[in-house]
Amino acid sequence: MMPGKNIKIKFNFFLFLLFVFLIFLDQLSKFIVIKYLSLFQSVEVMPFLNLTFVVNYGFAFGFLNEPSLNQIFVSFFIAMIIIYFFYLLFKTQDKSFQINLLLIISGAVGNFIDRIIRGFVIDFIDIYVTNYHWPAFNFADSFISIGFIIMIINILFYKKKI
Image (cartoon, rainbow, N blue to C red; front, side, top):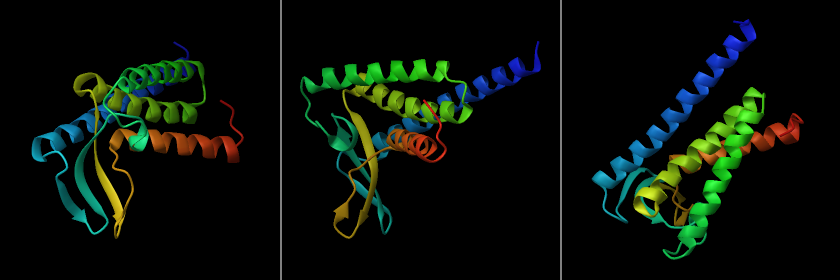
């Protein structure tokens, strides 16, 4: 076996393990929230951070947050994004871009699992300053955001191409 091919196999295995770990972390955190908090219950963790159990039927940060036919549209749209990002993941050879894509895909799959199993996404991280709260989110949302931010930085400042 050629040395370069062995490195690629090891990196792909690392990506697979990271993918599984991130989805596990996201789903475990949501399981803990469901088990120990009631809907809308809030527990202060720090002066700027609560764990608050809320549900989201829509897109990120509650956009289209209505339990209705939007669910079918949202689920279909997210499934298409996941498929496209998997395509990009397998197409690209850029390792940092693969990690960015993997973060985004892991978050999307974590939230998609919620949509399929429960019909909504579980959010619980509530960051605030005095009475001004950022919309509640979860680890999957964080993975997606971090992946996109790093991707944008790479594209803008390091001139990496998709």
